[in-house]
Image (cartoon, rainbow, N blue to C red; front, side, top):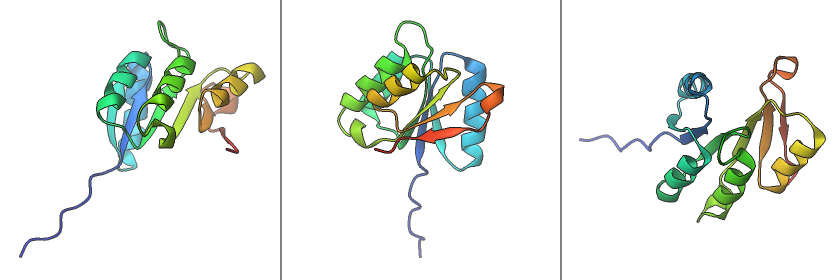
Length: 125
């Protein structure tokens, strides 16, 4: 008798141009039993999600070439992109950046600078 197949673990996509932060995020998410893929740019995230839409996206805002605001907006435009939670990890804490992140489709924000470590703000959407 064979046992029923286990469903695959949820897939998280980490999008950050900093390889150290990607590695730290990967370790944390894997400890929570998530499969993890990495993208080093907004375009790489869009390319990946165009083929395989993850269950959650962890997205940095401050990246060269395509920042996280543009990447978030484009990810939301992909098929099924409107349903995926997008957690923004950022050091930006000004009101305009926070408002813009929600305008382009962020689900929640988490600040990465020390004075607000662990702080998460979720959208009321």
